[in-house]
Image (cartoon, rainbow, N blue to C red):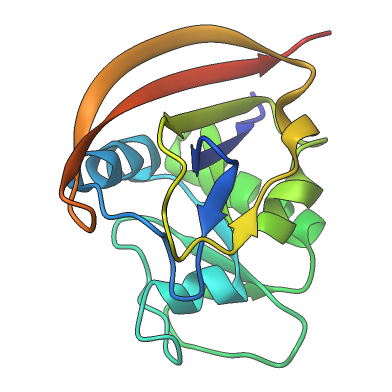
Length: 179
């Protein structure tokens, strides 16, 4: 059986998903959820997302996952797979997932990769962070990004956000394509 293509993304109420150096928020419980959902599965990301996992110049591969980085600018780093396109990345991720007995491959960002992947994805794992005032946010998904998807599971939780030192209501939502 072919592994499903899953997008995993957290977004603020204003559709913000990122800032120059990674995420505009720091929510340890949301990061635990991300790890739980992706561990053991191949993850596909763009070069900027990968570099944001490290110091901005050298990326830090996510442990326990095959890291596939999409770039066409000659970037190279050991311990990761480099592919030139999303289609090539998905092909390799499916191969790895089948070999490892995984039922999903994970698209983890950034915005440009999400925009390319939306038509190919089977499922979206969305963390809806019900707050909009994250001052560093400069990367957004279009509002229509989630049109044509149906909520099949949802859990609500209050999570602590460390940068602003507040608790924020969050929704962990599983979306499936509407046929």
